[in-house]
Length: 162
Image (tube, rainbow, N blue to C red; front, side, top):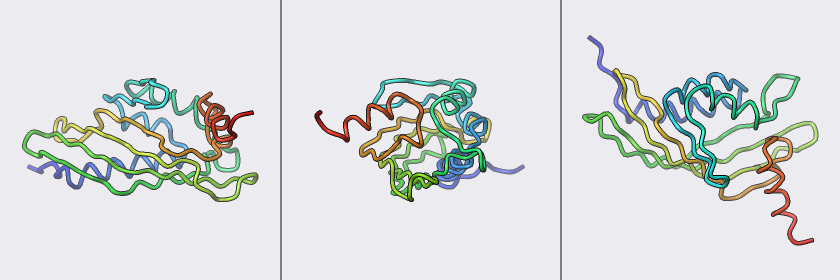
């Protein structure tokens, strides 16, 4: 009988898998990671729940490029502060995220610096996302990354008063 991995191993793998799936343009895979979870976007107050709603959110928000079907990004997640209770099968993690992007029109640069506040639960021996709060602290040029009105609002805030 195999034992499920400790949350100290499984939770960081989930966090890094999210970045890998998102950067590869696999929004269905991202949705699968959040099958029974909620994503809360701090700046807009919007919440998305479950696989299908979360997949659709990424499909609606994130631009992908025809050369390889990806958003031409790298989500670099660092500074994980992990609190795991393996006995109860619960965990939380706070982390930093920096999103880099490079397109034909945009030289390589950071476009977002923010934080994730995550909760996890072990269900039938498998660790899963339960809740993610996405907080964007600093915003760069999101025009080639997001289609959501939030990107245009952020661009207006960067440009200052007219």
